[in-house]
Length: 153
Image 1: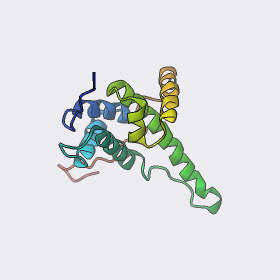
Image 2: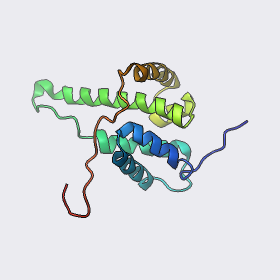
Image 3: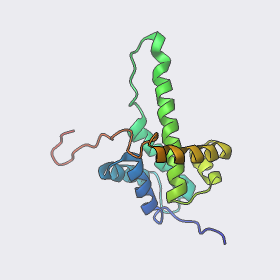
């Protein structure tokens, strides 16, 4: 039986659950869901919604979070740190997309932009890492959420 295509509104529970596990907090999850749904509309495909979720997470929680001493000798260290954090994020997201949303490796491959074989490897090792505690369920970074009521950050 073919799986029914879901629209962006039908994915909201999955998006929230994934966002909660990615951020480690309710406020972070709400912020990530909000940012994701700013980028999509009702007719956006399932793959595009998950791409928007990934992009929103990277923009809000990872982008510009890696700092490094601005010396020529350590210039590439910040880039290397960002790559490591992005890969951990992608492994974690792959497992969550598989377990929560039931996506197959081919669909996850389209979301993340890596080959299906890499996704299969990430799913296998990612589940083991999560079980062993090597890969944290908690969010890596907390977003900067501005308090609108009193104007403080």
